[in-house]
Image (tube, rainbow, N blue to C red; front, top):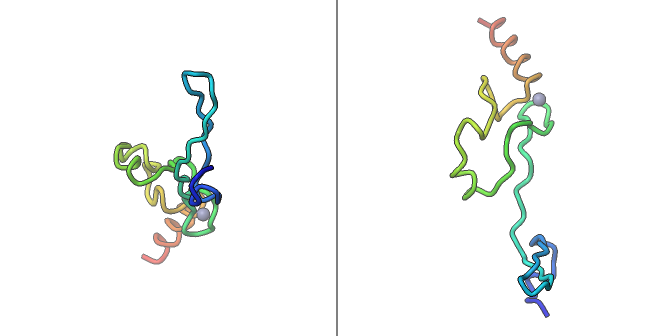
Length: 89
Ligand SMILES: [Zn+2]
């Protein structure tokens, strides 16, 4: 019987084959939710979905698109924001 904390779905289940051809269940922490656009709330592309300790080892250029507001706004909202800012000047 597994420990009580593993009975809920708080942890995800990973099926691992052992050298003895047995299948064991390993319990791992779930990934965080996907990054959302700050303007419209759509899921952002090119932003990895990993736990902080893995994000530490990923290069900065691989963590978000290399453009203004990359990783914060989607491309549509970025275009709108740039137009709004240029008009207000
Ligand atoms: Zn957006």
